[in-house]
Image 1 (cartoon, helix red, strand yellow):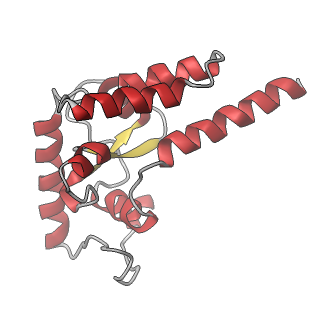
Image 2: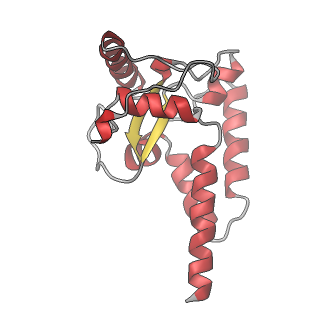
Length: 167
């Protein structure tokens, strides 16, 4: 029982590292949650469940390869875990599964595979929904800005993001 609890703690910590690496700032996550009502915005059919993720529509590595700051307002969207990992980034789901099955290099292999694809200018994510995700993010941003919503830049704006969606 203790061994299983220890393994579970390692899995939770690993999931945390996977999900928070290259992430939006905490203020930007809060802004995305407020803009998107704290709900999955996936514009495609899927089994909506799992914790909410804040997804970069154009992934961070891709943006950085082209000299773009990936953390802009219309490049983020709230998705459930299934939409994000199982639909858009199945390679991460596979790496997570491999890691849990004993391959301690699974995430390093994933990072290298993605890096190699970027060097060849090949997307490493499922691109089928990029336009619909971007349109959803733009629509949500435009609606939210009409209501006074703003995007925090470099942590310099005051932290008064409306989180009334939680009520």
